[in-house]
Amino acid sequence: MLRLTQKQIAQIHEHGAQDYPNECCGALLGREDGADRTVLGLVPLVNQRNDSPQNRFSITPEDVRLAEKEARAKGWDLIGWYHSHPDSPARPSEFDRQHAWPWYSYIIFQVEKREPREMRSWRLDDDRAKYAEEGIEFIADGRR
Amino acid sequence: MAVKVIIPTPLRHYAGKQESVDLDAKTVGEALGSLTAQFGELKRHLYSEEGKLRSFVNVYVNDEDIRYLQKEKTALQQGDTISIVPSIAGGLN
Image (cartoon, rainbow over all chains, first blue to last red; front, top):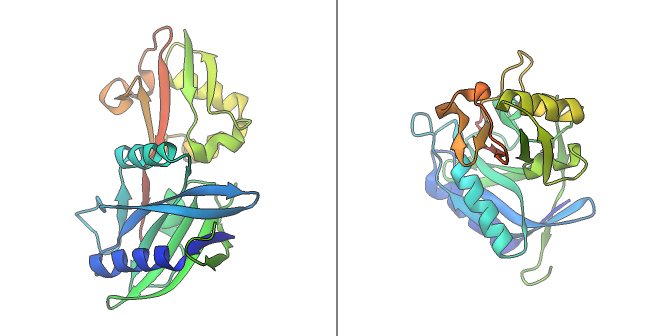
């Protein structure tokens, strides 16, 4: 289960709407609690795929290190990433799977004509063959 | 050469939950080979089926990207630190 507040969801949605028709992307900072995770902060990032931003996103290793540094500074972990699928379902593509890392939570959300729609979260299986979907639980702001 | 390999967060549970692993190697390739020999489950996440380092796996020797050195043939010095740092990529089709 991945826990987020409504405010965080609104921030992610706004990023997706702002960057539409391009894919947006960002980091999820938080902590693990057994098999569950709680998102405590977001780091919106700039999609580096200037050549094909409408169907591709890329986060540089420098930005990954930046997100990790920000997580460490707050005593959190870098637990995953979010990105949008403009006018396309909120499930991983084959391209997503080929480029994914295990362990991370991957939030994918659909943005249909600038309107955010479905949001789902996924984790790559150990054998890389497919993803397992993890449920998203909405929690009240201020509750951790 | 005694070197340290920093394991990125998403791979630590395949490496006994360690943040880093100390090993002996003369080159980056030898170090990664030794690492994956010790922790077999790491291999499929670092290397493609064709045996090449995956494009989203970035390897640094003391903060220098091996792509700008001699790639996996980059020679190591005593006390070097090898960092494996993810890139994150994807797309809707």
